[in-house]
Image (cartoon, rainbow, N blue to C red; front, side):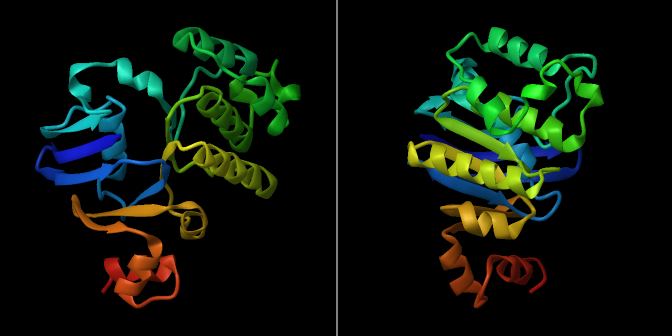
Length: 232
């Protein structure tokens, strides 16, 4: 469903992505990993149409995304830092996103899942970071999209909310969706991910299962496998 072909992107003299290629042709949870500055977020932003690549292409359902914006309605996106006007109420931001997308949605069950009912009339600027993240999760998952992009989704979440988020991600995985996730929490990735794509210096160093990576690096867990790559 998603094909990345010879994708390149530079910012000034910094080569962030250097002709990377890979395919995702079935549902599952795919972790995009790499050290800071490896191109993870840039790759996701190109997929989302937020950054224009210097070369190469991304195909979504066999269509070059640079030729259309219609594909974006098929993607739910949770950014690492979501910025909305602080004076908006929680109920207002939910209603605004519904109006913008104009698609079938289910915010009510998600609001109940994360206990946000009492915050609906509160302004975003008055919420804690963890509560704002719960609102962002509602905005991401309330539409039935075949692709979900999660950039550091656990930021600020308490243990109970983290469990609920993981259950929600696994539920969407069971429905055959493609879920792309970036995270610095390797235990989370090891628990959730079907495969990983590891970026290093703008190139794909490894693509495959976590078991395959641990075998290749002769390590017992993902955290040590990543460390073995970064500091051999």
